[in-house]
Length: 48
Image 1: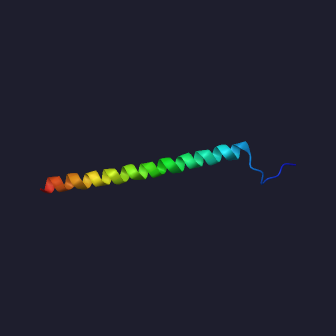
Image 2 (image 1 turned 180 degrees about the horizontal axis):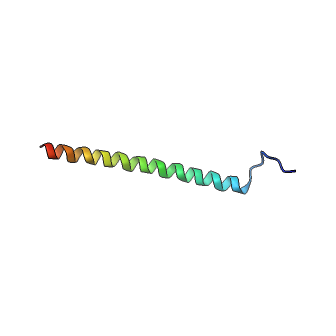
Image 3 (image 1 turned 120 degrees about the horizontal axis):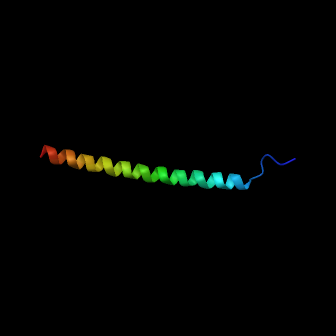
C-alpha cells in the first residue's frame, strides 16, 4: 500500500503550476495597477 502522504511527481507538477499561476496573477495585478494609473492621467488631462 502506498503512503498517502508521499510526495509524487504529480505533486511536483501541481506545485509548479500553482507557483506559475501565482506569478502570473501577481503580474496581472501589476498590469491592472498601471492601467488604473494611466486612466487617472487621462481623466486629469480631460479635465485640464
